Length: 364
Ligand code: UD1
Ligand code: UDP
Image (cartoon, rainbow, N blue to C red):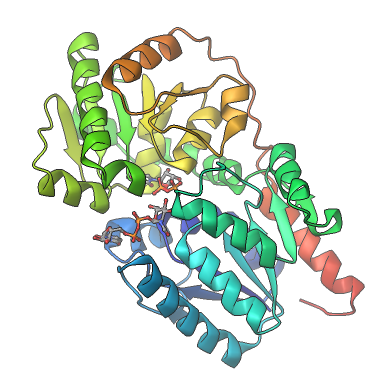
């Protein structure tokens, strides 16, 4: 049996292609949801839109400090795994749910597969960087999306025979859902915006939005972009960001904040945006796949492939650099190629696991 541990928006979206592939092949699976994300628009909407079945375990850990959240996830996952004894536990990405899920499994001598292994920002200030490194080092199967991610793992001494380059499952998710989004959702009409005539922004990184100066810089940059280009700035606001904007009492001049939206709605907004502005990992990848220019309001990125193909520019949070970066990216030809694979990562990951288990005489 394969067990999936998921807990947040990006994990649900990026694990969905692997879960679907297991369903297609009739492989028994178990879904453990940590409950790190829990409000409808951060969680259930993705199960509905991506047609995933309900989780078998809902741990309901909710929000808290890193230690509280990680500790509760460890206890909950340990208890579910002890009861169910799966053959392998799969986690995706770099959140507290990912690290705690992987750590609980490995301590029970259950094999761990890390989807999206090997990403590195080399910035230990980010909680995600610590989660990624620790998860990779307890994993038995490392599904690296690109050759660059594989190199990062080899440089840390992880043995080559544990690593496979699979592409990123986000390509599968985009391919599986973009046409559906074009058919089903009318978010541009609802927001009264025109194709290629608006900017789309997401920002939620702890080191950005919990820091008043950095969040102020981002918002000022957005205001300048709005007036310079006379274009709407659509900002589906993560709950962490909404909380901080209110707490710091920051103005949203020229910015249209909306609630977080479903994946289909968000894909359509991304595909038709003039430019994407983000500090999200997944959004940098999606903009690259959709051939929409992107600027990243951070000081580094663990997605260097997007910089190499010139779909993305890291600009920090200074308003002038945001505007200069946006102008530069708007003038960049959209002819880069997608470095994240051809959309069959889910199939590859499941095939690697089934072959490994067959070799040991275990049928999954
Ligand atoms: C987490 C991950 C981050 C990931 C992001 C995806 C860690 C350390 N961080 O950050 O890597 O990029 O998810 O979006 O694991 N909240 C709600 N409703 C929810 C969830 C959260 O209102 O469903 C609010 C709560 O006030 C909470 C805050 O958002 O305190 C932050 O949530 P949390 O899960 O701790 O971190 P994220 O910023 O979402
Ligand atoms: N996303 C979404 N609705 C939104 C904002 C983002 O569906 O309102 C999706 C987006 O398409 C991407 C994922 O959420 O697949 C990225 O998640 P997030 O930015 O929260 O986390 P990160 O990728 O930075 O870990």
